[in-house]
Every structure is written in structure tokens, then in C-alpha cells.
Amino acid sequence: MYKKTLSALWLVTSLFTILLTSCGAASKGKATPTPLPPMVSYEKSVFTVESGPIVSEKKVFGEIVPSRQDDLYFKASGYIERVTVKQGDTAKKGDLLAEMQVKDLLDQLEQANIDLEVAQAALEKGNAEREYNLQRSQIDVTILEKNVELAKLDLEKAYTKEDRERAQLRLDITEQNLALAELSLTQAQEQGSTYEQQAVDRNQITVKRLEALIEERRIYAPYDCIMLRTSLRPGIQIEAFDTVFKVGDPSELVARTSLDYELNKTMNKNTEIRLYLPEDDIEGPGTPVTFLPSFMPLATEENPNQLTSVGQDYFYFSLAQNLDPSLIKVGMQVTLIVVIGRKDQALLLSPAAIREYRGQYFVVVLEGDRRRRVEINEIGLKTTDLWEVIGDLKAGDQVQGP
Image (cartoon, rainbow, N blue to C red):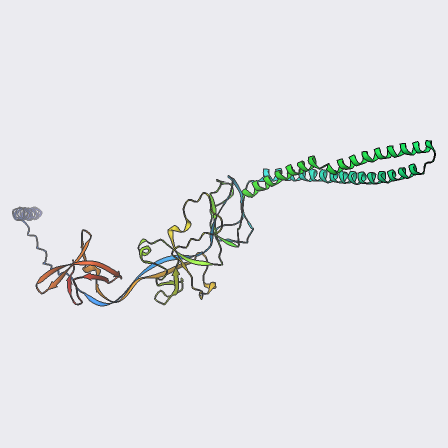
């Protein structure tokens, strides 16, 4: 019974193997067909030439900056000792903003001031002595002049020959003493404070020179200002006349945007421009501002190391007088909408319908079963959806897309 079961199982397995082999051989002899992709119909878009108004605008982004700005720099090279402000801080006129290492110069200045005080004291003492000598010489001359007069009186009253000889001798001696006193007076009047005064002058020159050297290594706020830009920190080395601070006067502000070459060709002081603060609705009327064509935000002193103008890479716009000052501050980001052009009536077409070949714009106009190529003489005002087209076209023309 067991042998019969094994024989039956072997027979079934063999038949199944033969069947699989036959199917594999049949599949190798005949290729599987590849289904064809479904037919897709592509139809070109058709656009209609419209007639109507168009307002071409451009949105640009800017910031609020002071209308008066200055570059500050040291007039000497050296290492930074201390910095009292950072970017965004405000300072009062005359506040110390930064200082180089000046300890050695301060020590020299202190010694020079001491030397100056000593020289001034010597000059004052010498002047006092000279004044005393001058007054004494004047008094001596006055006394001797009176003695001469007395001697003359004595000579006139002398009766004997011996008395007249004695009186004459006293008169001669007194006149000689008067001459000596007058010479002393002349010398006292001409005697100057040459040596002491020269010592004072030398020390004053030394003090002024050291003070100037110290001031070259310090930077003060030129007016009430805000720090627009600085990367200064203690310990770094700075070369003379390298800009280390850019400061501005926050009392007078303007809007600034990056230079746009397209706008540079069309924008002028009469261009319609609207400004929007961060909280304003961009779809709203905005605040009118005026383009400042030749504005440069430079104020007081020219940096001899600065070769190009600060304002050449920006556009500047004046702010409206009625704009609330509390709503704006330096560094605030703003949006400006510039009206490039406005027309009440123009031929308008979607830019998707306009073709271009080797710099020439054209369109393909549908006229029944025919197609006509029309050159675009000029592209006028533009919006996102429509362009003004100038050429052999009229409102209602059907234009085939590329």
C-alpha cells in the first residue's frame, strides 16, 4: 500500500514538471505585444488683443535712513583701546565713541603740562623782578633829578669861592649819578623776558602737539547721531582714515532703495510713488513720496580715503510731511510702489502670446484658416498679465500662442 502511494506521488510530480517546461518553451517562441500609448491632442492657446487702460507699476523694497550721514575715521594708525557704542546706539554731540591706545601720549602730556607750569612760574617771577627794577630805576631818576635841582640852588646861594667850588662839585657828581640812573632806566625798559618766554613757548608747542596726537586717536560724535554701521572692537589694528563708523542724524529721515537700472531710465521727481510701512495694507493708497534724483546723504567732512560717493548705489525718496514721526525709525523696512507709466487707452496682449526671435518681437494672428505674422514695433507699458503692444494690430484680433 505504501509503495503504491509513493509511485502515485512521483507520477504526479513528473507530469507537473513536464507541463511547466512546455509552457516556458512556448513563451520563448512568441513575443509579448506592447500596448500603444493613447493619442493625445495638443491645441495651441489663443489670445485676444484687448483695448483698455493700463497702469505699469513696480514694487521695490527699501529702508528708512537718515538724510544726513557721515563716515568717521581715525587720523592715525594704531590699536583700539576702547569702544563706547555699537551699531544702533545713539550718541550726543561730543560724546567719545572710540579711542586708540594713548597711555604713553597721556603720560607725555602730563609731563609737558608740568614743564609748562614751571616755565610759566619762572616767567611770572622774572616779570615781577623786571617790573621791580623798572620802577626802582624810575624812582632813582626822579630822586636824582631833584637832587640836581637842589645842587643848583646851593650853587646859587654860595658866596665864597670855596663854597661855590664845593657846590659845583656836588652838582657835577649829582648830574653824573642822574646820567647813570637814566642809563639803568633805559636798560630796565628794554629788558625783555626772552629766555623765560621762549621756555614757555616751547612747552606750549609740546603740549599742543601731544594734544593733537591724542585727538587723532579719538573719535567723537559730530552731532546727536545714531550708529548706522560699525565693526570696531578693542584690540584690532586700524589704519589712518579707514572708515570705522557710519553715523546719521535721526532727526531727518528719508527712504532708500537699491539702485534699479530699469527705474533709473524712467523715474524722475514727478514720478508717482507710494510708500507702505510694515503694518500698512499693500492694496491701500499708501503714503506719497518724492524721488530725489541727485540726493547724496553726505554731510560735513570728506574722508580723504573715500574714492567714491556713498549714495551712488541707492535711490532716495523724501518722506511726506504729514507722516507721523512716531511710526518710523531708522532701519525700518518699507515697500514702495513706483508707477512706471499710465495710459487710459492702449492695445493689450498677454505676454504668453508674444514670440521673440533674434531680439525681434512678433505674434501670429489667426484670420480664419490663415495665419499672419505681425511684427511688434514696440513693447510699451507692462503689467504681470498684460503688455502694451504697438504694431499692426487692433482690438479683437485673435493671436495664436507659441
